[in-house]
Length: 160
Picture 1 (tube, rainbow, N blue to C red):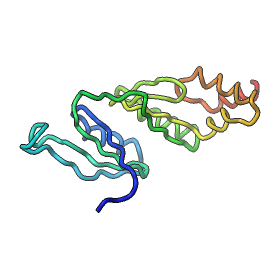
Picture 2 (cartoon, helix red, strand yellow):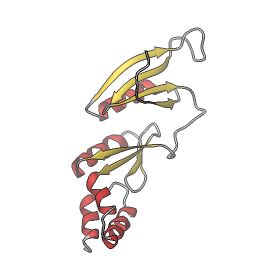
Picture 3 (cartoon, rainbow, N blue to C red):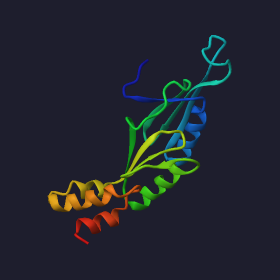
Picture 4 (cartoon, rainbow, N blue to C red):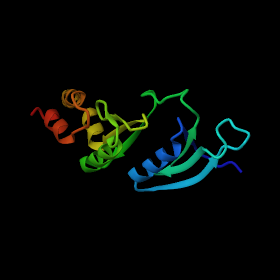
């Protein structure tokens, strides 16, 4: 039986199970699902992990150990809608630990190369302010940041 909805497939180079464990440690609401292994039929070595199912924050994923052919790029990213600065700081710290990279404007790459946008709700409200001058000042402040700092964006929007 096919269920409705979407599952995002993430292509890894041999470390899908490690990635699933990492994401389950970062996000509070997560579960590990089935783990499928390569058989004698291949194409990977028999017994090695082929796919790992996991779910975080209600989103279903499959980590596929497909090989080095298709590395992650910024063309696809996952946006984390954070209630406040403290939640954004938490996810930023967790996703950049152990080799993740800060990029710009709230974007980062985790240690597997997956791109994330860690976005406090108020940051979006500030750059979409109905007053175009406030929005421009908040946006200008944001463009100079790696991790978004809502207080600094608010001060900039207010002209301070």
